[in-house]
Length: 167
Image (cartoon, rainbow, N blue to C red; front, side, top):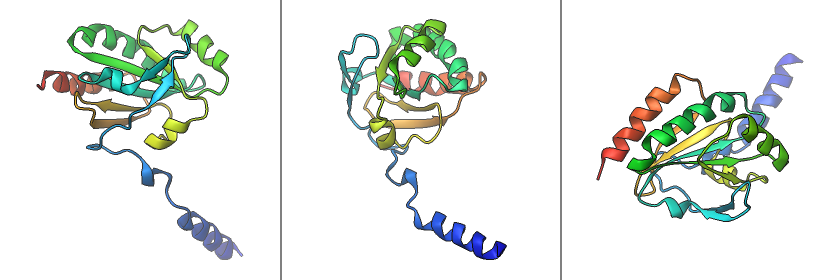
């Protein structure tokens, strides 16, 4: 009986197309999108940041690693913004008030956008929280980072600094 159940589960899993089949990968252009900012509800397009190195971060209020990442990303943004670095964080909470409460606890100076239906998270292939994409000055994804631990910021800063130095 166990073997039949195992075979049925295995067959079901292998017949489903992997979610990341359409995911954006390193070396591909980041899809252009426009989403409303969380607080002002003003449309913001990813193309507004053309010519800059962008850390595109998909997050949610319930994401425990986001509590670690936000203060560190804010510091990095303030440190490197004058060199052409931007952080664009896309919130996936269906309830906007949860995201706003999170931001009261972890205030940031970078752009916060809202994607409550997860439309763009799906297009990018986000499977874990947070997931971030480092996009170069030409709009090409150079790095994909899943999750976040405090030590990650050093490696991310090195990659971002390297991209900022490129002409």
